[in-house]
Length: 166
Image (cartoon, rainbow, N blue to C red):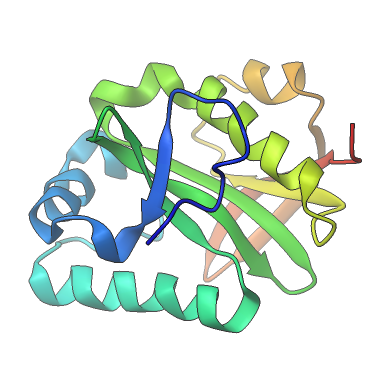
């Protein structure tokens, strides 16, 4: 499927998760470094788990017209992320492969440019587990912590970033 972000200059490409080889997704989600800050992540990933995961992400696209993308650079899978509707809010999530961790800020900036151009997203929220200690990047982009939230039995720090059009 064509990228939803082709109007933005970038070094990344964005595709649907259903376009990614399930073996790449299994390897990514099975990596202990990926799971370190994801308290809601299943203990094991196999073809069945990945199929359910991708189906859930695809359902968000059908229901809300937006969801999570697979993120690539030069056709190399870097991870997944995007916007997921949480109640009336759009949550921006990003889960990178361990060898792509250093690209998070640049990818997040791309996604924020997308949000600013999309009238459905007047602001984005970020939910991070308290185990995340380095929050400087969120503050540099202007996100403000607005509290904590319990989600499926886990506590998350909740941030908000207004995304008015430029």
